[in-house]
Length: 266
Ligand SMILES: N[C@@H](CCC(=O)N[C@@H](CS)C(=O)NCC(=O)O)C(=O)O
Image (tube, rainbow, N blue to C red; front, side, top):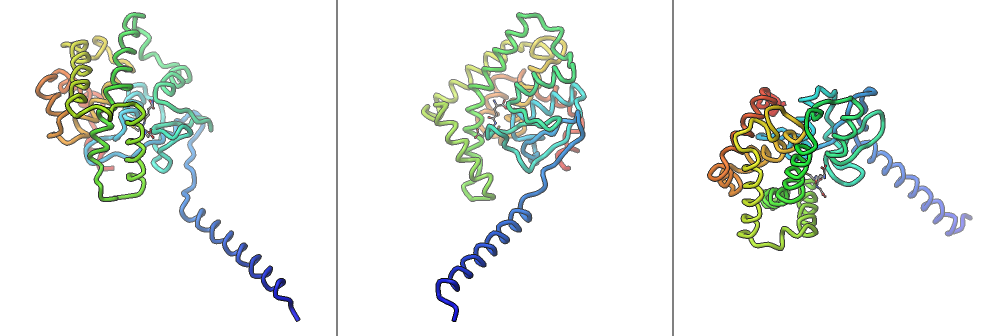
């Protein structure tokens, strides 16, 4: 006669094996095969376009614009938007991961011997960096704020939901969310005023030739002008007070992305 404990053990073993098999099949079913590209081709991990903007991440649009200006070969991947630092975008090239859009530009400039910024003087580079850090490390938090607000409370998909809570945490740690709406507008206006003054009537942010700083500034401004609701206060502020920034954004879109609308529908 079979003892109860032997029967139990058999059930436990069979149950564990079945659960393991189910788990394995579930992972195989849901996890898409990681995309691979040829050596020397960049695999850009980020979010897909929306109906109005090529990338709803200022940092990814900065990279897309940099690739377009320099002719760097790349492919998109939308299955794994968050990289090893849990941020989008990130890239892989020759099987190695690289994170942070600015580190990525530095790395690829070296890898592909890009000369986009070579004509800049030390002073121009310094100005470009200060402008870029202003909107990437400060003003963009206003944009995160508006974006987080515009993500509907109705859960459209789990990723968007978890992303909203990540944005919320970031805003908290940065401190932007501690300010009143009026204070946030004041901070944004001050930053945009500074950038608008520096741009003046120049074609590009540092003169008459495009640089990586334009890729960054376009990535950010386009996400307001085309990414946020036209009636949102950052858009109204840009149109009413800083028309040269709106003209700059439209101009760069027409120059670099004449196929913008076509790409949105892909
Ligand atoms: N310094 C980073 C910033 C990237 C960044 O903040 N990306 C946002 C999306 S636009 C993100 O992934 N946020 C999610 C999080 O921080 O948890 C870069 O230049 O790539």
